[in-house]
Amino acid sequence: MRITSKYTKSKEILHRFNWQAEAADLSIDSIKRIEHGSRTMSSENFMRIVDALEIPLSYLLYEKLNEIPLTELIKNVLYDRSEKQKEHLLHMLEEMAKGMDRLI
Image (cartoon, rainbow, N blue to C red; front, top):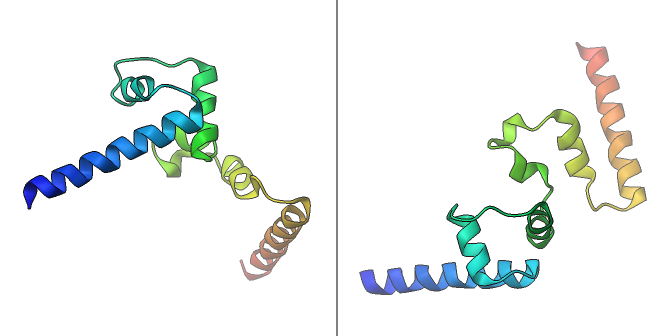
């Protein structure tokens, strides 16, 4: 049973490396060296990885999510939304703020 779980875990890790490398257009060895800290990466490769993972840059720049500035968190919510969605979300935020002003 133990060997099976180790094998499964190894396959999961290998699949993750393959996906990251392919999506970021980097070699598997490059991704492994970066993840293990034995290689630094260029800003270009950093941006490729961010794009491949489809996450906002701030999630990799800050060690803890509660350290991300509020303005950056709002930008992350709006990230990759249509203009109509952005307008609606901002309108909702403004209305919520007005309601809080009346309550507090």
